[in-house]
Image 1 (tube, one colour):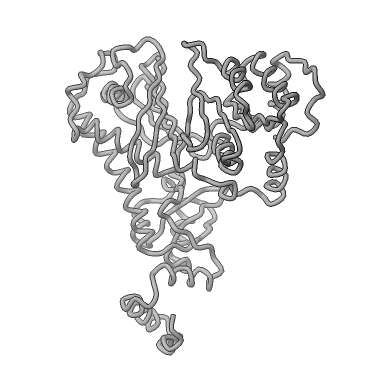
Image 2: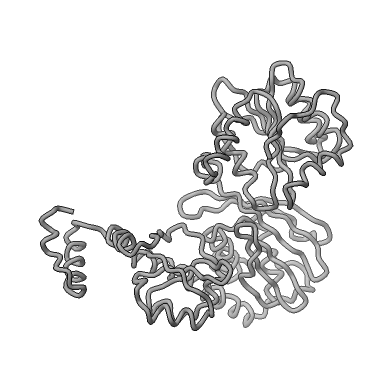
Length: 428
């Protein structure tokens, strides 16, 4: 801001607010700069809400009437503290009303007014539209869940079922969910999102629309809608916010109907670098030292949705060079990356992790990413490759586990007894 503009700031709150509005209108400063400066003056964090993962549990704790009344939006809950984005964190009336409604301590952060209102509109509009669509579908009297699948020709682009499915997917991507669970129950259908490894219930819909939702998902995922007795897998792609997002779809017959789980494979995750992962400096140095070696094994472990694939792909981006031969074996291939040879497991054709890994070791690899170790044979080939490959190869692999000690247990239970010296310091 030009120094002469400071003369217009008098120190009176009401007058200064008018002067700031004039400066914004003249294009000298922006709303974001004002909000950021206000946050720095108040010694509070400043947040941008465009892609901020908003916890709907926190949103549900505060009455929606307070959102527009005070220009605030709940963001997250941690213990007995709720974090709330506000345009004026010094508003004691707003803070008191939030405390009274939630019975929790309030941690205020600053957001730019228009950014906050846009996020508020997205959130409230999505919830309102979901409720309106489910109500409309219930009034239409869709076939009950014990009837057969819905005729695909019944779906029009603007049909309520189509709009409901599109909204469920777009809202999950907006909330940065890793999975969407559509679960049948006796009297209703439940929708849950897995966000940061934790499932959150997002919607309960009437039982009458269950078959329509599942049939629509099967159609767009190229899954046989007539088959309801066995699990099926499919895949679909959507455009969200100008970028392509893939979804891996799996159906599973349950007592009250078919359950559908969609894994969201946001291709932006494959473009992340290790610096984007937020590792502590010491951990980042230890990890870099490990993956920079031309030999050895790096198991990456953690529960579903913890970021194993994202970590490995970020690592591959760091090591993939024209002079390095990188080959992956995955089931399925979650992210497609240029310059990397990716193999999709196909058990029906005899292409398993073990058989693919044997062939890869004859393909002069420098780095091998192994999606999962499932049996004794794969464990044996992987460990021997990492220890005894003459040209020096490194094997990266993943385990789905809930505790840090379980990778050792899982390796042990493969019943493999290494003939070469054991790895001295594996990186978990």
